Amino acid sequence: MTGTIGIYARLSVTPVEGDPAVETSIGRQVQDCYRHAQQHDWEIAGVYRDEGLSGFKGVHRPEFERMLEDLRTGVIGGVLCWKLDRLCRNYRDFERLWRLCEQTGARVISLHEQFDSSAPDGEPVIRLMLSVGRMESQNTSLRLQRYMEAAARAGKIHGGPRRFGYERDGVTVRADEAEVIREAAQRLLAGASLRSIVADLNSRGIRGAGGKPLSARSLGRILKAPRTAAVVVYRGEQVASGTWEPILDRPTWEQVRELLDDPSRSTAPSRARRYLLGGFLICGRKECGKLLISRPKYEPWGTTRRYICTEGDQSGGRVHLTIAAEPVERLVVGRVFNLLDGPRLAQILAARADGDRELAGQLVADERALMELSADFYQRREISRAEFLANRSELEFRIRGSRAKLSPSASRAQFAGLPTAPGALRVAWEGWDLDERRRLLALAVDQVIILPATHHRGFDPNRVQIRGWREIETGP
Image (cartoon, rainbow, N blue to C red):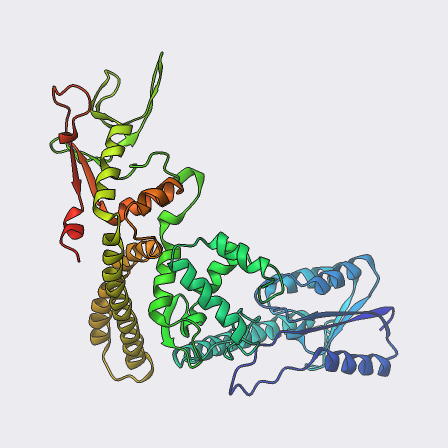
């Protein structure tokens, strides 16, 4: 062979327990290729190494691309590889390489297959070898998927970067970071925001697993991570309880997760409520029941805030009904204060906290039962598919119901630390923003029905019917 040659080496390896296949290191590949080139007096003009990159899935391989460019510009006149599937395992890369070889007269040599593309049968043989390599790669991928699923259902976890709260092995708890997670969870359930917790932790010099300052998003991910509660998730499904020590117990983790997933916590401007009772008020006109929306009325002497039902003849100004915002808000808030101010709120929250804990415990039990059911069907083969589907449907129905109840109850837990002295709730109200005030109203109010206007002059309180008092009035 005349001219220069380039050596290409690649290693893509994910260890699979019990798999007899053994990958050869890049160093070994390059060493064997150097020895072969010296035996044939070939000049080595470049070595191209792609480590940890797949040759099958279409992943960008920078060294492979550099090698193609050197072929195109004549820096190298051929490619020497340890094994053909190290060079490429998909037809797209092979076609690109082969086209360059045809254009430049370059050759491809493989040590393992003792193959030289310049032979008369070079192209048919190389295509056949690529097909075999592709099949082997698919089989390896299938074995890996099966191993990962089996490991997950057995309660094991996979590798990856170090997670906050655990050592690099992923299962040994870091005591100092675990304490931070528990503290953050308790503060969050007590009503603190993620941003305020993060600001405090960063001011104390606490950093994430990678050494960077924490953010509200990263702390939220840490608190919601299944690993934190020793839960194994495979393809989005909780499949087993982990074999390692949890940092948060399951009921607490469930409450934290439901709280953080509550859409009412979103601060996106497009979803923010501008009026206190937005989403609470319902049109009481017969056969309507639509939500009232906030819409100011602009007049020469000023702007009047109001809620309106947009059903009806809007162009003619005859919508179903309207009501002034300030008096109806004052009425609803006053009734909430009368019910919740003082020790009454603490009593209600304490009773509900016990119920929330019981509900979270039931949710955990049902999720574990679902994991066991999956193991009985997929692993132990102890039940039929029909039995599996029937029981799974019932468990999933109960789990959805528990989550629906737990989500608002997690939001209510934010008020557990409010002062209970008479008048304290009214004082706290003055310092709250709109979202905090709305969350308090949601403790007592489900809906506020607004009836059509009468001939009553001014604001008529009889038009306002509040739903949701029953649970409060019959509570502790």
